[in-house]
Length: 468
Ligand code: G6P
Image (tube, rainbow, N blue to C red; front, side, top):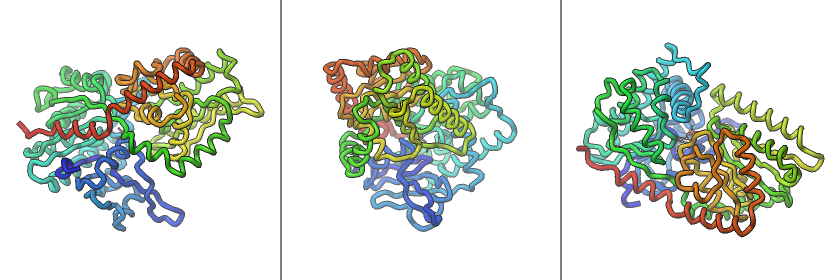
């Protein structure tokens, strides 16, 4: 805690998020994104400064009414103009950079970078400037500045120009797009992005794969022509994990116990296959359900004997791609339930309500946890589950998740595009011998607990060196 006192953290989503109640009053909702949710407990009470954006009307009202404050944390909430913010967050950060780093573009049709998109990039730049200004004003001489994620990639160069004394570090929580993915962006903006990141003293990633992708972008002249720095900045790898003690406390809460009891009624004595995600294209929910259907087709012994519970809370519904993904997903689930369900058994139970207590209860109860993203920076569910699961559950993990670099030898690894392989992995996980399960679950727990969130924060602070 002492060590982080002189630290300034910057992220798009701040530690406190708000929604509106029936009467239009702001009420705290907890922090949606995994990144803010993980950083918050680490910095609580530390005296650190946290610069973040007000993301919607509820946040704005909360700021106005003085609710964006917390004892022991200096929270600075920026209030960008609504239009600037929508363009920076929805159009550039979520619909372009997120898609680029997760390789999600459906290239036969999208993206289409027209003049309106170029204007949105201007808003993204403006939002980054707003952050850089605030940091430059607030940071003490030679302070450590930890900037999080793709929303703020340009602030590195901006801070190097404004405050060369600062010790700036950037951390990317997503994968980083391969050069071929970055080449989809208009070259001038791809260059600005890389130049912005090259302005940081150091920049970190969850795995060596994302670090390598970032570095290789600097070998592509199309992406780096005009970049001021001749090569990539200093890079480092530091995987993030949950805080085991905090998670154990959360799992033992009264509300989680209640949710656990409710769940017992839904599942009965059947096996429980679980997934916990945002409704997010990169999470690969639809293929997960289709793989489950393959399992029911090819392994009839599991019919009526397993429930697939999908806790998938709605996310980024301002984007058309997310709305249509959600409706396709719901359609697939209905079809599978109609085709295979019986009077007493619903094969897939899909719940899109964001209920953390329920998710934690389900993580305690699962027999198989499916984490099959098409590409994912880390994936914290793959680590949270094994820490609190009480049934020696098996982790079926995508080879494209950052977490696989640490957990491959203690999980069942699948190609997320291969439905047959995923169904076979589900089958062998469900059928696994009790002694083998117990031994693997113990090894998995040990592996996950070996690195805490605090280790990750320490790594960033250690990278914050005086500018050369
Ligand atoms: C996840 C990702 C982070 C990202 C966050 C944003 O946690 O791992 O990389 O910053 O989502 O989510 P949001 O809801 O704030 O757009």
